Image 1 (cartoon, rainbow, N blue to C red):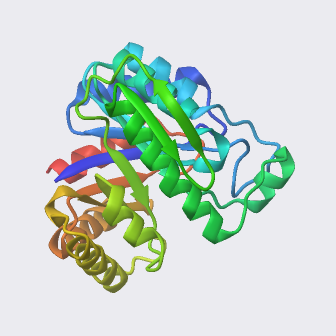
Image 2 (spheres, rainbow, N blue to C red; image 1 turned 180 degrees about the horizontal axis):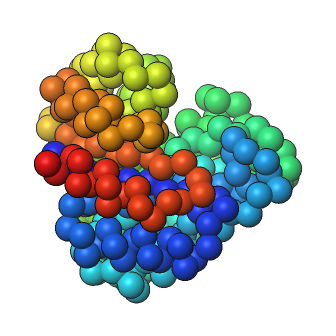
Length: 277
């Protein structure tokens, strides 16, 4: 079982995040830390400050030695896949191989509208995400890569350097959609993240089973995919421990605790102590 936590860069100063991450790195319990990736807060006052997740991770890579990190999740609509690939290889090498690449189709209509970024239809978003993952994989693993898709074209691109992690950093795909998200996770994910919005164990079990079925349909071993569950910290240590145990029994490999903004430096150590006891 792996344990990780997510804090938000919303309403946070670099010094606050720095101290939280250094403590997590030294403490030894947490395996990974995550950030959301938005241009303005997605579910709060859009005038509130929020910093860039990928830039912040450059700082994290420089001040930590052990802990892994990634976005949960980056909207695919924000970056061309070649840019995302270059950011990924840079952070992977800066951290000596600790990056996990979390990317999703994109969802926040107001955010896209405010910044003039086309969101596309749901179908097109998932076509784009599938192509992005193929381009990422190719650029990060092949000496020369070409690709001709419906939305992206890569012509004999040479992409160096390569990542420390081989064949590439893990891909993280999150969501519960049975028609698009789960099949895409079966195809590409090294970690599938189940976002627990309603504490619905039955939904988790059914989507996990569907993921495994989708893997078998394409000839992939389901054991290659880490199954993670993300839930918001319920402000109660005993309840947190109970939920972790319930999801462990239901088949989760990885628990991700999401802490609401602004970040509280006392929460990750106290939750770690409760889960370790």
